[in-house]
Image 1 (cartoon, rainbow, N blue to C red):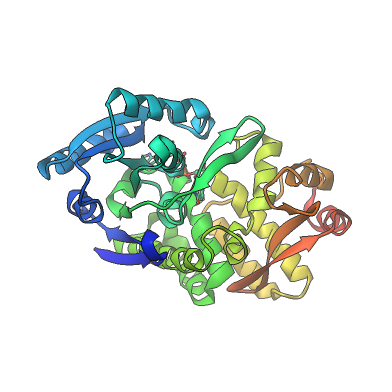
Image 2: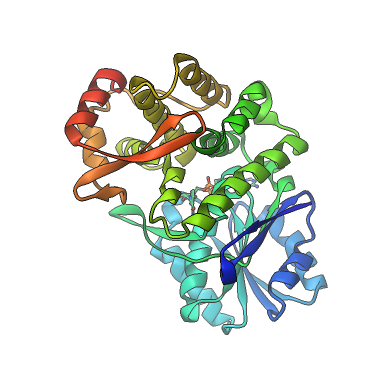
Length: 362
Ligand SMILES: NC(=O)c1ccc[n+]([C@@H]2O[C@H](COP(=O)([O-])OP(=O)(O)OC[C@H]3O[C@@H](n4cnc5c(N)ncnc54)[C@H](O)[C@@H]3O)[C@@H](O)[C@H]2O)c1
């Protein structure tokens, strides 16, 4: 097992990465005064992993209950959040209890939001079970639920007390979900670490079936990068925005196609390709670098082309509803070279011209 640290002064916490991790011991270390835990999971993950976790926690003296939500992004709602609240109240949870998020990003985001608001805040732990959640959503303290008018529009910044990424759980993860997670993995190479990009590129044919050693290195490197970025800018006043590479275009694509058509990571893959084509057109990425990025995404079974029929106006109208709009202008994350990027406020005229000429297909 390897342990990293997210350095946020009194809100610092460890990230444990390994196989068959003894969660009870780590949770006891992080939450020495807690005796009662509620595991929040969903109807797919709980049957796979809850019993073993419960046994492990109970053997260490914890009282453990389960709140199983419905599975899917469409249930990342105020109703699921209220289900957690009701469950906590019915079990008579006081501020001494803690929540455990056992699942992917959806479960993690809802649980974090519930933890941050129940009785003005109780502790919580992230046990991510998807690759995406291990490398991205479980670290950094963004919590959220969706509103009918926008994704992740209701939420808080609230850090977990520890993150436990047990790679064993990836064995039951559907391949398409592994691909979606790899999109976020590739993102870290493009925005922060050229060498890590090369590491991924050299293994591109085997990433979908990566062995535990490779996965362990990948999760560790991504968490290191996320921890470094979050430690410098916890609440996204600046640097942290680079983690959104491909997300602004990606959210527009998800909304255009209808949420659920593409997985989040798939839409982000197309979005990253668009941002990289823009960077290439500005002379920031070489021909070879752009081709390598596209080859890597494709090797991970990720889409890279803009949806057929989606026009520049379709992008712009949806991107204006995103959280990344400042003074009426959309803020884009664009590579400045492989391994670095910047945020750019671009006019709609400029973006429209670029999208119409280089991206949109009729
Ligand atoms: N908070 C953040 O910083 C942050 C960052 C990125 C994404 N997110 C959010 O994360 C969510 C996406 O997360 P996700 O990709 O993990 O999706 P998800 O939570 O919907 O999980 C994907 C699917 O895999 C299933 N699953 C999870 N683990 C499994 C396992 N081990 N075996 C078998 N099936 C398993 C789930 O039940 C679900 O059906 C989005 O809501 C997104 O907004 C948040």
